[in-house]
Image (cartoon, rainbow, N blue to C red; front, side):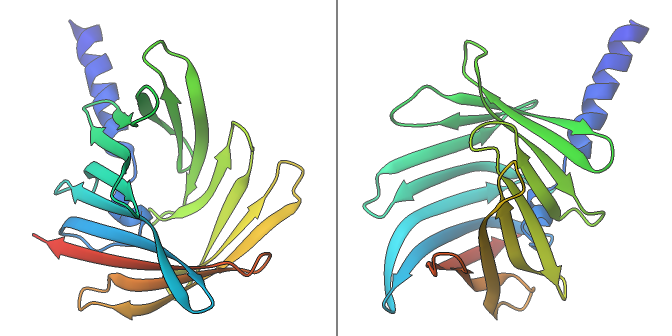
Length: 206
């Protein structure tokens, strides 16, 4: 009985230790739901790429989400379970993603099919305030994304391959915020391709 109690306690501690989605995304406490629209901007013309609607738990984690393309076709749905997140797709079997806490502000996120075939895995490194420091892919294309902040805002993402060769550098700027500090309009520009994205974020609060 004591061994079982210890195992349950350990799993509970690890689950609680996982970083909040609100912290990762620099969102304030008390967010209830949000819709995120990502547009590609070409010649000052915006074209919707995809739209994601998210429901948050009171402790700042995404309870479920639904992503559709510009025509409203389903791309992905996620549902948070007790020990994992289920990712559902219209054209392939679901993924079951487990987050394991690691020392030194790290998490290992691994996704499997029902037959336990691993599909992808990444190590997330965090800053002490819960924001993402870097993401290291353990599967193809084995990229590392490093996140940089200025004045408590995400300002740049640098992407390198496993040989440390620069793949891309994305400059990020928040143009509009609400009264709680949530970024409502954000632009991202690639210095390698000059591609531009505009992200519109519409939150509701408890």
